[in-house]
Length: 351
Image (cartoon, rainbow, N blue to C red; front, top):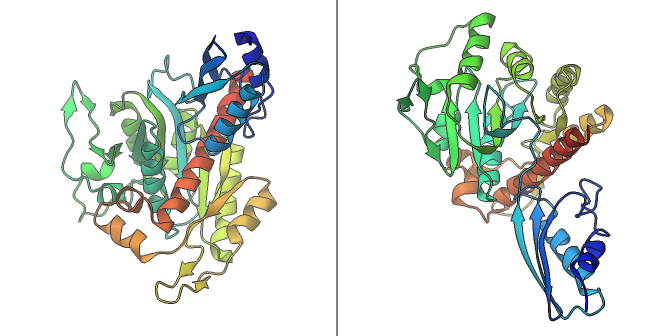
């Protein structure tokens, strides 16, 4: 008759491909019981958006089934997100486990669209998610998330409204959208700090931060004020975009911010009539800059009419067309980003 120790020994042979460690040492196995040859346990993933969830589940079940005397394997799957920061004791953003910055070297590459759909995809996986619109010059997240009006303030803390299961905060809530924002560096830095300190986020697994384009004060303030779980660099394929994206990547590396990877947006266009794939803005630029800089390439996002249309009316495509080809690409991006954050968190845990 198998013992719980035998089950744990078998599961210790199964490794998480992302983290390179076995399930037992990662504390991903809980509640092992054995009764009349029936083994029950919980597989606790490091994120609900685990990119290799099915593979891990199948590997864990197979390993236990091979233990002598096992008649049946009953496995439940849960998740506990690893944290890249000491969120429980933090003075700022207490309760937020991981902060993911979305950055670009230049404007016009669709960074906010990536940030919004990434946040919605992470929330759809079961994670607790917020999005902070730190693009002080052109905040577009409220429009894309379908949120308007001034949020509630309680005990001098801003209560972020919730849209598509994501908490939302933006400076766009507090000034007239028809009035141009003319701010110098100190005011930009102060505005970002105010959003970081005065929003009541509660408990979050991931806070996605949509930065303004470039390498200015908002990006520097964020990187120097709170520990970032990592940054995603967004570019389009053409040379003009990737050369500037490389500069943004270099800046975050210099600030010791983990680079989660590069995303190539507007990578191709699939004709809705004939299905032909066309690389309107060239191709391969994002992969090239990632390879040259020694970071991960997170994927290609298509140029699609539905993505633009849904963003313009406050209904991100991942939320309203979750099974569309475009949404599947965004979900795969979310899985990869969550996996990279887990790697960063695990590396910090070992120190």
